[in-house]
Image 1 (cartoon, rainbow, N blue to C red):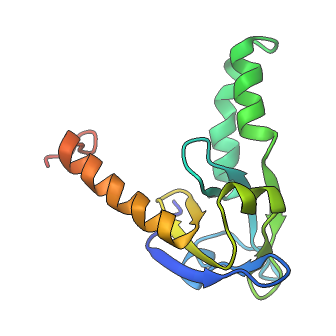
Image 2 (image 1 turned 45 degrees about the vertical axis):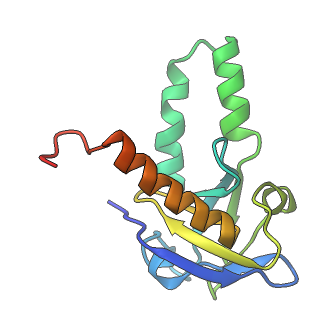
Length: 152
């Protein structure tokens, strides 16, 4: 199973390209020529970009098949999950081009932070990433979150 770990900084170039950090890139399945495939989408919870390997995105969307096709729930979820999703491929150097609407959603200008979240990773504006990591730590501590089935 793919595990994206750590927090990594990088920069957007003038063309809106950013190099996926090697520790994250090495976790993504590559085809024979080293090209990395991802699905990028705006987070509907935070001002960041979610980065999904295609198989994980497929797994995320599979439960949609169980919803009534023309129901409001299905339409709203489909619009939220699929309408702003962008399949991207890296170049051989591991750079992806971030669509303008996603850069705007995440307030990306120059510096970016890649945040590993296990099966996915996110791209953040650096100061917002730091606030989010601190907020998550406080929330876990205050609400005493634990993993299901853990002894902690």
